[in-house]
Image (cartoon, rainbow, N blue to C red; front, side, top):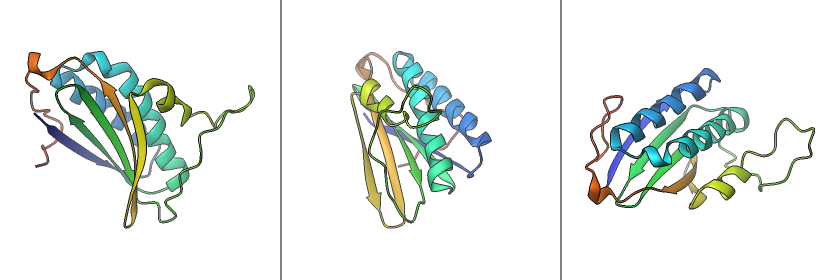
Length: 143
């Protein structure tokens, strides 16, 4: 069983909270609360990066299957560069964002397409055989 939903946001800092809410509402609707906290935190980091570094509108895509949820943040950065994860010193206010998926996610990565970049992470969740994802009222499923 695979279900996918998506939502689009402007390149505006207020969109980060909207993206977090979208992911939270989607995972709750799917019964995947066990992945909720990490998914919301990682979405916040990736959406912030899309706004700060790409400076373009972005899209958040949520996918669920039998054992995991995957969240993708797609930006329209023409340079399509993803900086290597690095350790920031104790006084830095930024620079730790890409370390989070390395520490929290079962898998993460970046994919490139013509005119876009997708940074994604996957979190394990209980088997979907025990629950049937309910359609999220906040978006239209993508087929």
